[in-house]
Image (cartoon, rainbow, N blue to C red; front, side, top):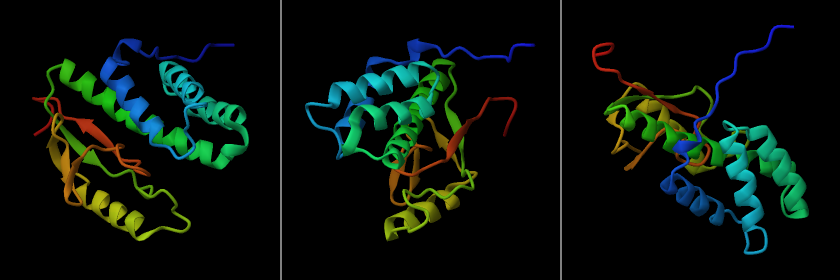
Length: 171
């Protein structure tokens, strides 16, 4: 049987800054307390170092945190932590290569925490992210969306991505 091609994740992009931001994101979760922070953090770092294995992150969170976290909530947390961390790592990679701009790409999946029962905030965020589609921004600054600077994948529920602009290949 032929083997599937794989891409190894370069763990050097898990910089101190990325890990500190991940720590802040985890501490901000309502399910996080001093007793389970280390478990959640360790699970998240392992999953991200494995190339962003959000399924394993979700399963392990639900199993280890137990009654404090449903599997549905663990899935949402996994996506949130994964998207934010990927957004940060993508920015580091691009700037390391000397690239300065990217294009906001709306995913066509609602940028909402709860698409089945969206809040006013969900609706506002989704409309703003949809309007941002195709806009060019400085990677180091982000794009002003909905009245504040942000990056694709950085806000709760956001499924957007940034497409890096390579000079000479794109206007």
